[in-house]
Each structure stands twice: as C-alpha cells, then as structure tokens.
Image 1 (tube, one colour):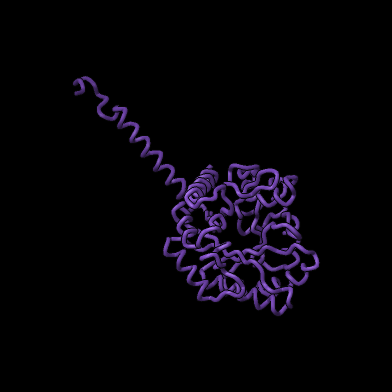
Image 2 (cartoon, rainbow, N blue to C red):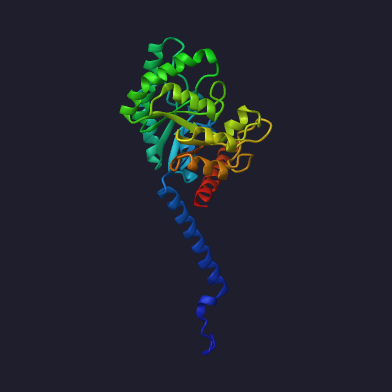
Length: 304
C-alpha cells in the first residue's frame, strides 16, 4: 500500500510502466506504417522468393509477412508454370487475382516475361496485347518488361512495345522496363529506350540491385539513379553482395537504399510501388520471416 503522502500512485509501478512503454512503441510503429501508406507508397512483395513452392504458398507468405500489395513473378503449381504469360487465358489470370484478393492482397504488377516479337511484329503485338488483357483480368495496373539481351532484337522488341502503349493505357495498364542486363543494364540505357518508344505509358521500374549486378559491382545505383529522373513508375527493391549475389534481404547488402530513395524522390518519384523482389532464404518459413523483415526495413526507411 502507498503511504498517504506518496502521490506517485500506480503509474510509477515498474511493471506497469514497461507495459505502457511497449504499448506506446507498438502504437508508434503502427502509426508509422499508416503514415508510410498514406504518403502514397505501395509497399509490396514479388512472389519470386517462393518460386520453389506452389503459388498458394507464395500468396500466403506475402500476406503473412504483412504486405498489402503483391507482384506476380515465377509462379508455379505442381512443378508447372502457373503465372501470367502471353499465351495464358484471362480466366486463369482472373483466378490468380481472386486468390490474391482472398488474402487481402492487391495485385500491383505482373512480370511480363516474353512475347513472340521474334516471330513477327504482328505476332509480338498480339502477344503483348494478350498480356495486357491478362493484367486487366488479374486486376494489375502494372506490367513489368525485361527488355532484350541481344542488340539485334532491339528494333523489333520496342516497335512492339510502342505499338501497344496506347492500347495498354486505355486498359489502365502501365508499362515499365527494368535494368535487366543486355541492352537495358543501366538507368541511362533504360532512359534511352523509354525515349525511343516516346509514349507516356512507358516508364522505368528501377532496380538498384541489378545496377550493381550487371556492372559486377562497379556502378553504384546511388550514382546511376539520377539518370532516370522523371521516368520511374516503380522500384524492384533488390540488394546486392559481391561477387554476384542478389538473393538476399534488402538492407543487408551494398545498396544504400536511403540515398537511392532520396535521389529518386528528388528526381520526381515521390510515391508509387516499392516491391521487394529477392530475399535471403530457401525454406518457406524462413522466406516469410525475411519478407516481414524487408517490409519493416522499408517502412522504417520511409518513416525516417
């Protein structure tokens, strides 16, 4: 019992104080996540880290890690490809969108893979338009393109992209190319390709880990990212470690994400998709934990 002259009361009880402090920290963390979301950033996770398991496990993992947005990449079911491709049906794409929605996830982007531009321009246009239609069916506002490795394919590939930009825009699907090696290994190269197409519906999904990866660690994305000012429509959040490793959790490698994001914001990317692509884990349970770690890392970074 407190002495009558002791006016401190139960608020000074050490155990109670610890509980109140824990509650305050939890509330602050939740508020920070809300502020990050309210600021216009869409923090998501690609399904690539779960490529070795059936896609429902991947969807579960993204949801359990606390994300609200999901990017569809490298999906499989019973050992067979199950993602969205130029030759998959809108019904199959819609089913994937429903599976995401059942878990409270919004499909934010689809990895486009390939389309048959090498066969002919018309075949390429037909294939890319089918990809757009499948994005619509899945409820995805974004289609991520990988570009080409061989320079002799550049004309045909980007002719197809150019011919499909307006079609995609009318369908509400934004095209984006990422640094992915070959003819689009750097931000500067991506910028040149966007200028080549010359349509507002074709932008860049920046990938800082790939800037390191395809330059063998010689080109720092902090130095490269100003080359994409005004063109970024999303970020594949990927880290890098020497000599050639990107399968690691963001924040544990060489990429200075704080400075990369600061420079991207300065260049006009002040809100949009930030989607984790790679994680450091093999077992599904470990992947889920690393996915959660990456989400918290991004939320803390944005809050700061």
